[in-house]
Length: 135
Picture 1 (cartoon, rainbow, N blue to C red):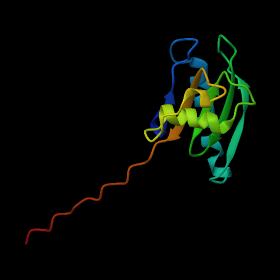
Picture 2: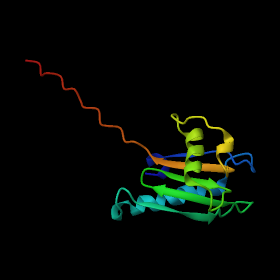
Picture 3: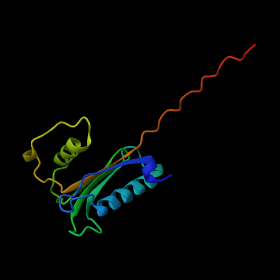
Picture 4: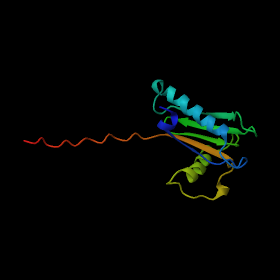
């Protein structure tokens, strides 16, 4: 199975490129693959976070990432001082159906792009209904 079959990838347009950022897409894929491989040897509450320069980004944007088994988020063109709560609020506004609108000035560092990966929920098997045997 591919990552796209087991995970749902969401990505905003980059304000600098005017479309999806290929470097952000590669970073989301790499983080999803790393967490998938780490699952057997980590607890459910495992988290990794950090900063990076997006490899392949023409602007060499700095990025912050927060990755758990339940959700991975990458925020582009923000510094390491950007508040995680503000970044998550911004991502929730854009990506979550339950996100509530907020004033843009509540976010001190707005990312130029962001991406999220969530595991796809496996659908429960539909039980077969057996017909009574004809007598």
